[in-house]
Image (cartoon, rainbow, N blue to C red; front, side, top):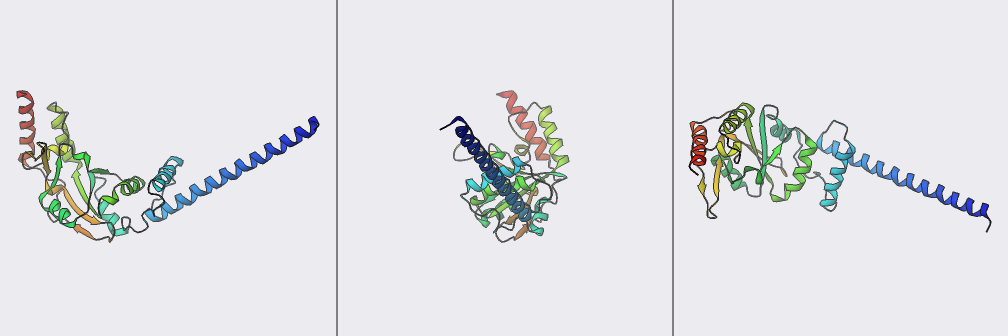
Length: 239
């Protein structure tokens, strides 16, 4: 085989390889656009999604082995979304999943129980619908009921400042917003109960049913909160 023939074959192979790469790249872009379109239609997201945000959704699809993304959920129905996000600009918000409505009702009436760290089971709720989609698909199998926790910004700022002034760094804001002192559970861990006034209510994401807490007050404050800070400071001094 002559040098020219080898050169021609190599050139053809390079052209074919380049064409195949372009074909794969085009299919990848098309796939990303389809996924973005699905996410925007399902969730109502208006903004253009970045490649990184699209990849996050793709990753979620892979994690759940191709299961439908929110297609059977009522999470972004107008009324449910309105309930979830109505206080988002003026408060600090969290969500917690549970499988039993009886538990959801008890939390709404009695407050949110947590051991040591509030953030082990409560997820921050922001005004980013894509962020909620990703969190929802990672937690939705823990239960059909989503508890919504809402603390007014001024309350969060005030008691966070009190903690900072007192040099308290190993506890968070939510450890203070309890109307009863922490109690030891069967595992000898401190169990806290966030006041029920900060429980906005709960939703069933499958049916779209909303249960509102009649005692909800995100601006609620109590002498117990300051007493909690004083007790924590006294405990720290004596230890």
